[in-house]
Image (tube, rainbow, N blue to C red; front, side, top):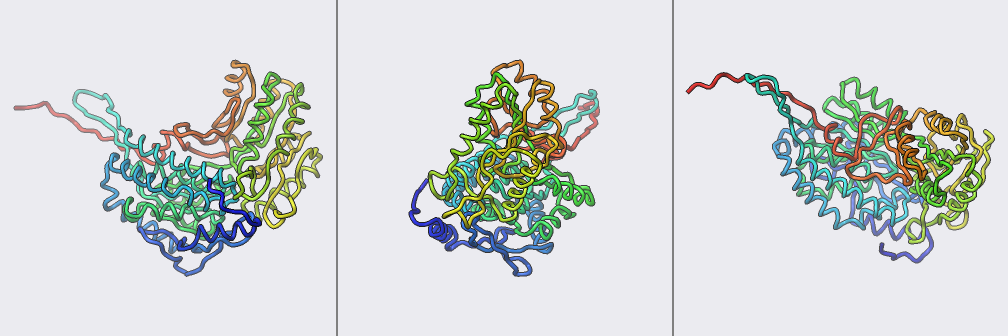
Length: 504
C-alpha cells in the first residue's frame, strides 16, 4: 500500500479524491461507451470518512435501463452470442490481466466510496479478480450429458446461457459481490446489465470502462441510480432473462414480486443474523480473535457477520473479558492510514440505523459492556461508531433478531448442546454460522444441525473460490462462488434424436 498522505483527515481525503477522479468520468456504461442519464440528472456519492462529495454519477431511470438491456440483447444476437467457452475464457482472463494493472486505483476508489481501510479494499479487489479468473477457468468445463434411453434414440443435454442477465449489487462489498455475478454470468455466455448501489457506484463503473476493447460492446453494461428508479425497472424488465440480486431480505421480497410478473428466474443472496457457538472446550483465544475479526471487519457491514455469539456458561465470563479487550483494540480512524483497522459506516442512513439499534439494546435491558459511542476529534465529521458489545442478550430482543449491519456484537449464554442449537436456529435467517470447539464429533454434529448455508469451524467468513455460498430461509435462493453458480446462469435443453437402422 502506498502511503502518500500526511495531512489532516480532511486534507488527506481531498487529495485522495482529486487523485482518484481527475480526468475520470463515472457515467453509465452502455454499449461500450460512457453516457449520461436520459434526463441528464446526477447525484453525488459521498466519502463517509469526511462526509464530502467524491463525484457525481447519473441518476438513471427506466429509459436508461431500456437502453442497457437493448445493448445487451444486441450483443447476444451478435458477436458475443457466437463465442465459445474457450473464447470467453480467454477474453475474461485478458480483462483480469488489465484490471490487475489497476488494483491500486480500484482500491482507492473502493476505500473512498465505502469507508474501508485502504489495505482491506486492496485485498478485496484482488479477491474479486480471483473470482472472475476462477469462472474463466471452470466455464470451459461446462458439459451436457448423454441420457441412455434405447438403441433407437440419442438423447443428450446442452447448457445454454439465459441471454440478458440483470445484476443488482449492494454497497458493502461493491466489487467482490459484483464479481460473484459477473464471473459466472459472462463465463456462461450471457450479457449483463449491472446496477450498483447508489452509495458505492465507482469501482463498477471503472472495471466496465477497463473492459473496452476486450469484451465486445454491450456485453457488460452499468446503469447507476436509485433502487426505485433504476433497480425496480431492471428487476421487472421483460427483456431480462435472468435476475441476480444481493441485498436485504425485505428488498429481496420486492425483487421477487417484481420479477414474477415476467416469470424471470431469480438468484437472491439476502441478509443474515448469523450465530457463532462457543463450546466449553474451545480455544478461547482463537474464538475471540475469530469472532472479533468477523463482526468488526468492514465495520460490521457484512451479510454473514457473526453478530450473535452463543457462549457456554462455563466459559462465558472469560470469553466476555477477552472479547471486550479485542473490541477495544481495534484502531478506528482514517481509512487511508495504514494503522486503521476499522473505518466509518458507509452512509448517514446506516449510521442512524446502527445507533438506533444501540439505543434499542439498552432500552431492552441488554448490558452494554463496551463501545456504543461516536468517536470525536478528527473523526467527528464521519459516520463512525465504536465497536460495540452487548452481554446478557435474550434471543427475543430486537438486537438479537434483526440485522443491524454494523459493528455491534450480542452475547448470550447456553447450558446444553440442545439449547445452543435451538437458540442458533431460532431466527428467520440462515446464511451462515460458526463453531468453536476442539472436538471433531461435536463440530460435525453441530454443522449438520445448524440451519445455515455456510458453517465455519474455528474460523469464520473465509469465502473461497469454488465454495458455494448462499442461505437458508429468508437468507436467499441459489448459490454463488462455486462451480454450481454456472448452473444458475444457464438453462438445460434436452435434445432427442431418433436413429434409424443404417443402410448402405
